[in-house]
Image 1 (cartoon, rainbow, N blue to C red):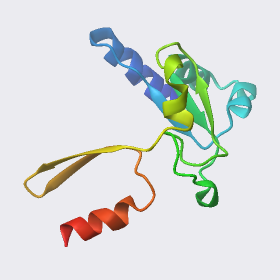
Image 2: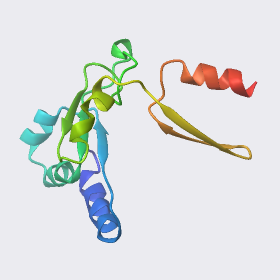
Image 3: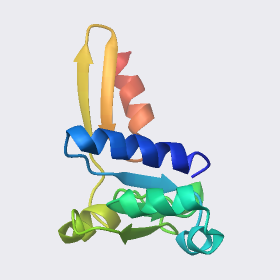
Length: 123
């Protein structure tokens, strides 16, 4: 949200040429952002399909959903993912891995212990 205006502009440019959904994670509280009234932030929020707000707190990482910790709230701004509440809030965490030579591409929200398990796989 510190560069929200520029990111909102980028999203608009990309959406001119292709379909793009936007899931935004922010350590800021949505209500605080709405009260802030900073135009770039409000524009970015309006372009989001899902906004996950609140600071990540490691002690509250319950290893569920696509949010980092249980204090974070999932806000469905558009209807794009409205039927996937369980995936975002309480579903199991999933990662997809793709290896190419020495490179590793990881997509998803890593479950607890992922870094440790990956380290064990590579050694």
